[in-house]
Structure formats: C-alpha cells, structure tokens
Length: 95
Image (tube, helix red, strand yellow):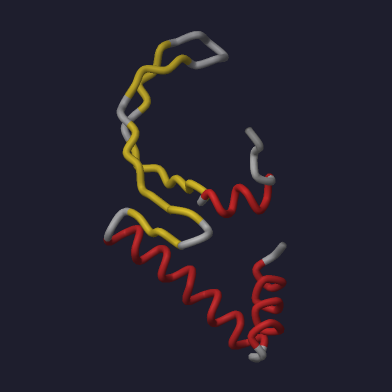
C-alpha cells in the first residue's frame, strides 16, 4: 500500500478530504521522527514500539577478498510489533 493509498483510506474512513488525510499522515510521520530523535522510543498501542538501538563496533570480513575489516558502531531503528498486531495478522497461537 502506498502513502497516497493510506491517506485516501484514512480520508474515506474519517470523512475528511484526501488533502487532510495526507496532512494527518505526514503529521504522524513527523511525530514518530520527532519522538525517536528526542526520546529514543515511541509506543503505539495495538501497533508496537519503535526504538533506536545502538550496535557496537565489530570486526567483519570482506566476502570477496576474505580481508578482515572493522565495522563501526552505529544507531539503527527497530520496530517490535505488539502482541495484538501479531495475533491479528498471524493468528493466535494455540497451546
């Protein structure tokens, strides 16, 4: 689904114009970015948690030459889906 399709769907469901739907989607995106930069995580109930995660520097290997190379530390983004989302998409596991 594209951003335009999501905005159109939101506009249809909320009874607003497509332009307002696009603005709402852009504001949600801006909120996620702002909170991740400021707090490092954002929890959306029923959807999941967005988090910044630090990876450590490590040694790797160039697959073409076999040469050892240093991979620097960096920040990555991670999304952990909520249990409700997993159950809705994948179905609840039975014991």
